[in-house]
Structures are given as structure tokens and as C-alpha cells.
Image (cartoon, rainbow, N blue to C red; front, side):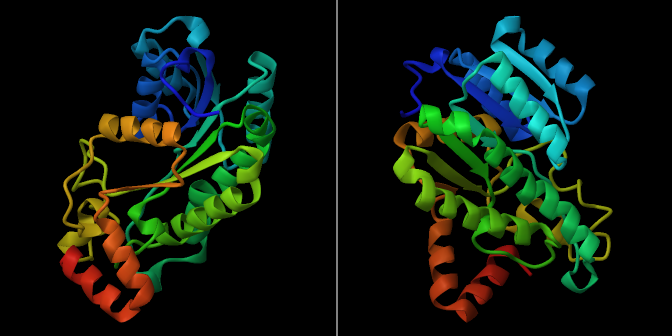
Length: 273
């Protein structure tokens, strides 16, 4: 079953990282279409503020405060969805975190922290919610990054988890696609935000100035969250396997796979490093 705004009001979705950024933009698009949405985030107070700001009927939203790096919390949110709705048509694994740092100074503990949130949390949520998603022949949206396909300097532990998310998404498609599950890997460039260009000042204090910029200095205009949210839902309608924004990044990914040395040279040129 494809996602369609024509019958969106009959559907149910769950979005992690739902209280800000792209996650909130996706929630806005879904609720505007009439879809019932479970919003998941760690901060219960912020979650309630978000739902209040949306000014929606109580029956259209479900707030679930949970730390999705913890299996017990993920089991609880899956049980809540089952008990409240008994169905699920769309899961958006949007919660995530980026970083900056020199690779030789990035510790195993820092890799573990980002691995838990950027990869294993998506695995936990997907596995826990697979039964209703398979029953509805629904959608799993994995929010990756351009760093899911090609990395650049000084991104610390971030790319390793995003590369893993890409591999996991392909495995889901290969093994469960014939059972009706649609899996979409979204690989966006830097997303516009109020603190773009300053949020990594502390982490990147001893790094080149470019490393503090969105995308690690990649020369791309910030993507508006609501525009990307609309594109994601259209990609679900079409049951696309991937959405790469901007599309021209595919050329770099192809070159990097076929000619790694040339790909590294181009990456350094494109990020000014």
C-alpha cells in the first residue's frame, strides 16, 4: 500500500526526533494531511509543548517520551502504539546527532554514543514496529545523510553510523520488500537551522573554519525542513528506495565508488579542505 495524501487521514505514523528540526517538519506535513501521528522524543516537556503548538485535535497526536537508545523504552513505545491504534503505516527514524573532530582523537566512547543513536536506535525501533508495518505493507523511512554515502574530513564518529544505516536499509529492502515493506533511505545535505555555522564552535575549535560549517563545509545551500519533508512523503507515495538531496551528489558517490582516489580529491575540493 502506497502512502497517499488522498487517504492519509486513515493512516497512522510514528516519528522519532519529532520535537524539532526535520522530525517536526515531517510531523507538520503528516498532520496537515490528517494522519494520526505518534511523536517520540526524550524530553517529555518539550514534546508536550510541541503538540500544544501544533493546535491539533487530541485524537490526532500521541506523545511518547522515550530514550530510543534503550530497548525497554522502545518496547514500551511499540506497546503503546499497539494498544492505542492497533496499526502502523509509517515509521520515520529521524532522531540523530552529528559531530566534529579529528579521526585520531575520536574515542571509542564517542563512536559508541553516535552509533547508539544514529544506527542502533533505528534498528531497535524498526524491529519493534515491524509486525504492524508488515501487516499494513507500510513504510520505513531512515533519515541518513550525504555522509551515508561519502564522508569528508573532521566529521568525527558521525559517518560510521550513517554508512551502517545505509547498509541496514538495503538489507531490509532485499529481505522484506517482497512482503510489501517499503524502505526509503533519505540522504540529505545540510538542513537549514538557526544555529547553522555556530553549533560546532566548541567541538571544532582547533579545526579548519570549514569544519564548523553545515555539512562539514560542503558547498551546498541549506535545505528547508518543510521542503524536504514534502519530498520524503512524495518518495513514499512512489515507494522509492532512496532520496538524495541534492540529486547531483549522486555523481560524487559514483566517482568515489569507482575511483576512490579521485573521489577523495573531489571531496576535499568541494569542502574546501
